[in-house]
Structures are given as structure tokens and as C-alpha cells.
Image (tube, rainbow, N blue to C red; front, side):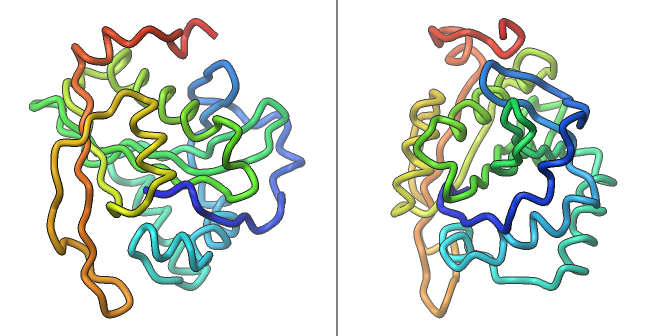
Length: 200
């Protein structure tokens, strides 16, 4: 999970009428589609993102195939984060959904020039509201590098609690990195004093 990422243009500016799957006050979530591959490819190719997420750049074809797998995976929901003018500012996902146990993991990737405006928190809040308000989730988790301060700050603002550290859990550029493990439980979400996505 990262908030430190560059964008590769706004090829989606013309998508003013893109259908939203979920709406919050300042952002909307639109289902990720294979047509978003070029945009995602540009974001994932950013070196800061690669470091923070522990990934390496892939070809555009590979990213398109990854999105196709995401779409076919019934245990995950992927969304583009859109501003009211339909500008795409990032990607958010609810992955590893286990309906029986009521668990899932959140993922967030936000474009660099859109950081610091509250879009990451707004998108994560909207995703959390979807998980607890429309789906039978009880526990959401997130993992990020322990030195990824922007992501840790967004998670904290959205109510996530740091549970611990997975030591040396990520290999990137020849180094092992610790991962911070955070979670949010349904009762904690219910106690959050903020508007819900459906109140927008």
C-alpha cells in the first residue's frame, strides 16, 4: 500500500460519464476495467511505488493480464479512485475476501500529485464503508513497509490500529523489509465519528 506514486497523464479525462460503483463525499469508486491498464501501468512503473509496495515494473501486457485476473477473481473488488470531475487519482481494492470469516485486506495506490489533499483517506473510508456497510466483513487488514509514513498516516486516519510487525517479510532490491500489520474491526468502525459514504 502506498500514497507515493506518480501518474502517467490523464488519459481518462474524457470519461466524465464513467459509472461509479460506490460514491463518497469527495471521491467516487469506479470498477477497474482492462481499459485502465495503461494508467495502472504508468502508476506501477513509478520507482517510489515499486519501493513502497515491493513490486517491480511489468509490461503493459502483463498489467492488462493482471487486471483481467483481478476482474475474474470473486474474492476481490478493484476500483479506480475518481474525483468529482472524473480525474483518476489512484487505485483501491478489497482483496482476499473471506465471506465465511468476514475478513479481507485493503490496498491503496495514490498518484503523487494528488497526495496531501485527503483523497487517500476519503477513498479508504469509502472502501471500509463498503466492506462493513454492504458486505458482511468483520475484520479488515492492511500491510505496508514500516517506513511508509504516508500510508501509515492514511490508515491511522481511517481508524486502523497497528497490530505488530512482520519482520523481514518483504524482499526488494536485495534488502529485507519489515511490514507493519494494521487492522480495523467492525465494532471500531461503528464507533468512528464520521459521515458514512452513503451520507454523501
